[in-house]
Length: 156
Image (tube, rainbow, N blue to C red):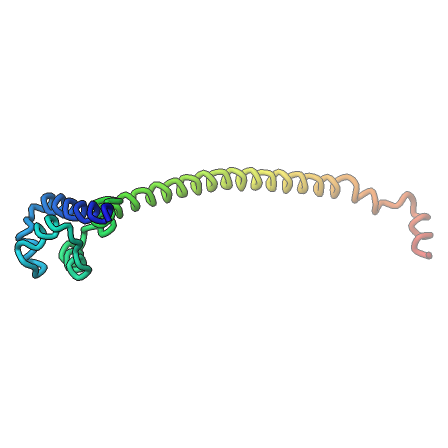
């Protein structure tokens, strides 16, 4: 029971902290969400909890108020701060992934360049080998040692 009463007090204190940041009084909030002027001071004094309808109206009125922070004290006071931190973290991860991808692309481009050079070298060697074959070995294959050999091969 003691813990619940402390949490209620802390909720009111956190709400007060948020209102001070926004430059709003409990009186103005009371009017905005349709409760009596003394509602919040009475809740703190009597150590009573806010009704769910009151909390819902507070969160509807202050769209950037982090419900988790108000109720538990965890996280940032404003939703935008948590979202900005999360977005910043996600951006860092994405930038790191982009850097890794860029490094991989550079590596692959170097490998492609080396493979292209190797293909070019193989083409040149092939051309050279074919040229040499046609210049030296091929003519000898077709040259008959003698006319007689030619005739004897023709008869067979």
